[in-house]
Image (cartoon, rainbow over all chains, first blue to last red; front, side, top):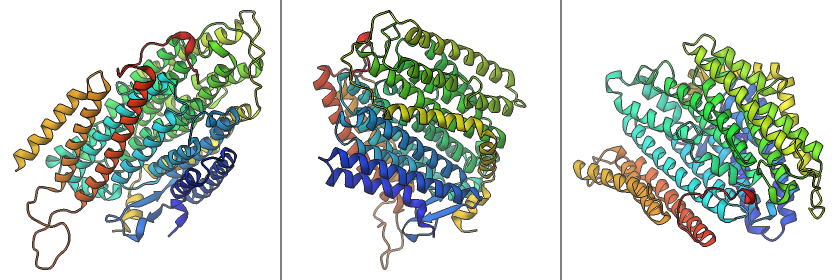
Length: 502
Length: 116
């Protein structure tokens, strides 16, 4: 048995405990260990990705209990990719948090950060539905702490809303799991797939209820309209590095939808066929429209970035809703892109807010900032990426999605929505950018403002470099993601690997 | 027994949902607790209702109840307990810092956004 599979869960968990227990009063040590932990996590994730790239599915049986009885962690191409994406993003954002001093504006930032990583990696790796719930709770409870890091009345209030909304989501998740267990008698995902396929169609009403409840839970996570209300306030009020890390949290919802509705409630399963794909598609179109209109209408940079995140989730879910290998590959490419792009946008917004003093994120002309040109260039890059203009990966991603939906019945609706909202997004970003960067009101920025360290800019350019690399190496990346999608749409190998050919 | 369980879960859920839709944090938290009670009961009976039967293997016992939901519900209880504690602390912090226990976020005072 390959013990490395559990390393992305165990490493942050142990590290977080050490950070809290023995380094509480040593911020310097905390930073060193936290960064080292993230570097090691990236290395482990790279190793796992190389291992999964061959197409073999790794299974880790916790406590050595065989599959339907014990909990398993499963490493396939999809989970390896997502863990690698999370680890890389976390490392860059941690550097940003340290560079800007965000981590010292409250207590226990690094420990919470590690717990957050533990939850996210665990959610991507687990092969058990109830264990997925547990990892959701781990990442949520860490995110509650991170969300209100550094405090402030508005942030706390937004935090309360966020927590309440997610507690309701968790309750719904438990109802869904209870229903599924009552119908099938198992919660192992591979075993669920076998039992669901064996179930006679006429007896499967409760199975459909369970599938639908699960879909709602994941839709809340993925901020699908009309379940997106938690997102704008949370993302706009959260500390910048945290909001940027949250860019990967919405992807967990998309990941879970992909996983459950290819593995368990796949397109071939009669009982749940066509249950969610239309719903998901139209929800995603609305999400896209609402997000991009929000970008155009936002009056503050924080909310603009939050609505951009909603819009990109819409685009992503349109691709997910196709449930064909081609559209899934496009969705995965767009997942990587929109995680990096969304994170970059939040980081740039924070750079602007730090430099504008009292004006902060309000979309009003202000004084010239320190490093005006550099920040403006970063904004330009982020806007191009998120709006989906050439030459960056947003354009490639949207092209792939348009191509993948060419043969569907709703092709004109999808193309129209994607293209029209791209235009709206371009307008929104251009308007915001020109207000902030091109219309200085003539006054000079207050010289008293603190010096601006280089590390945050390094982190921001690191994210931009990731997006550029994703655009330049789009061919090889797509080759890998097509193999991932093919593996996802042939669940027999996954089931055989988990249940031991049984 | 079935009727009793089903109506108890239904009532708890209904009351919980009603309270969650209130605008003040305290009723919302009470509503969340009611909802978690409801879901714990629901999980508990998802292995079917069996009366007077042990969940663990024992000599001379013929009928058993499903042990897995009991383990699941323990996990769920622990998690919901922790989450309730978190939300109470958060709500208290929010009340103390803004002097209002309203759940809604007031429209932004434009100039103060992003203040750390």
